[in-house]
Amino acid sequence: MKKLVINILLILIFAGSVYSTGIDSLYYKANAAYNNQYYEDAVKNYLKIVDAGYESADLYYNMGNAYFKSDDIPSAILYYEKALKLRSNDEDIQYNLDVANTKIVDKIEPVPVLFYKKWWRSFYNMFTANIWAMISVGGLILFIVLLAFYLLSRSIRVRKLSFFTGLVFLGITLFTFTVSLQKYRHLTNKREAIVFTPTITVKSSPNQNSVDLFVIHEGSKVELRDHVGSWYEIRIANGSVGWLPESALKQI
Image 1 (cartoon, one colour):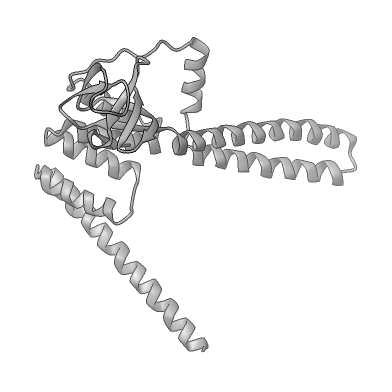
Image 2 (cartoon, rainbow, N blue to C red):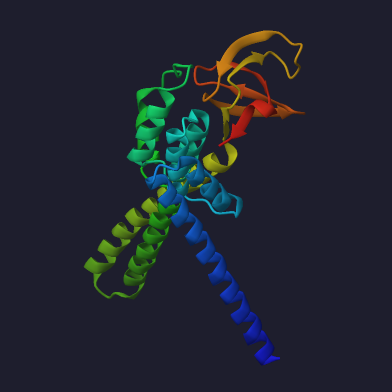
């Protein structure tokens, strides 16, 4: 029985290694195709990696670049947005996304943001949810160490210093944990999509015969608010709201 378990583990490890090697090979081929300006081949190999269940900011960023070079601007924007979701403070991703957005028809002015909200967003996006969580764990470890000094030290001075410094690190721990949790919820709960129909009319209700509200074009980003049948209620950056068919959108 022991030998059987060991053999099964070895087979699983070997299979995982072979699978990982296959993904690495696809990634190498895709990058090589991109470097040689075979952008469609690069996209095909990147998509195989995505279909295998892999995702990363670098993978999505490379896909965005390949689509951009192929002149498929909506797909480029989609994958730049996916990359930015995983690495929100990456300047290269943001720059390429901004360039891609200059290529689309719609120039939607966002609703003005109050200065303190703008400051908070800038601070909030300094790190990913994982890094904020790691900072929180680091703060908790330091708090525990200082608590131990407070409980075990015989020096009044050391106990006071440990107590007040420990309170600071406890505050940092609670704050960064809250930011991490909020960022994680934002990433999982806020749904956005890119329009993939060249020109489409946004409707007043989830019905093709309802009143026309405004026209939107491919490449524009929308927030998904509600889902009824095969329709999504969407909101664009300027606050306008309406309904689009699911077939016209690809979720970020």
